[in-house]
Length: 185
Image (cartoon, rainbow, N blue to C red; front, side, top):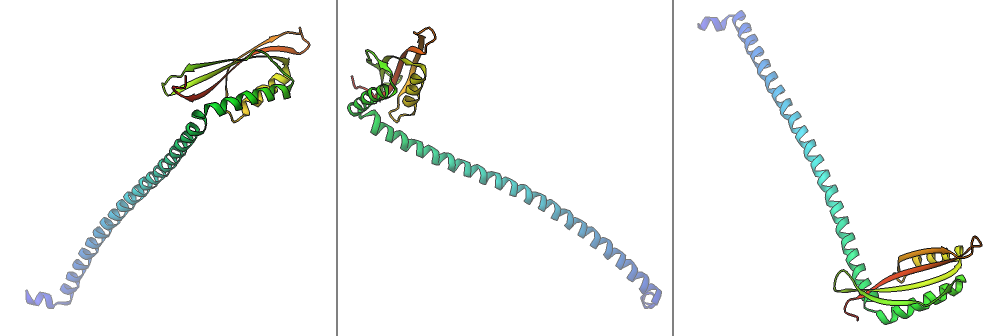
């Protein structure tokens, strides 16, 4: 057997078998490594996608939290400056309604005021009943002024009646509401 390894053909055949075996093993290992690398790349891409989704969700949550905190500040500001400041607001509302109806050329009759309990015990609803009469376009301008005022007036009733038979004069029953801190009766 020792002479076999000394023969040139035997050495070449052994070398060829070893080379083929080495190529096959290397090919299998390379394919396995490529499959592992592809699988790792796919998992990495999936993890990156999940991470981006989580980052986007986190950004949305931070935005929602910021809006929530801003809303809380606005609510506290609203409670402090509007709900608890009843006397000053009533005077401002009354003055605003007088000035606005006069500026728009709308006649206002017997204004009625009433306080009602809100859905929760910590809010009172201040209701204003105000019949007005004037031209339709002036009453529309009055409503626009009320809606755009910063007095937190809500229109709760609006009933129009034509008085002139087509000449443009209308009568309107206007109901307004605003809110105050509860227990103010």
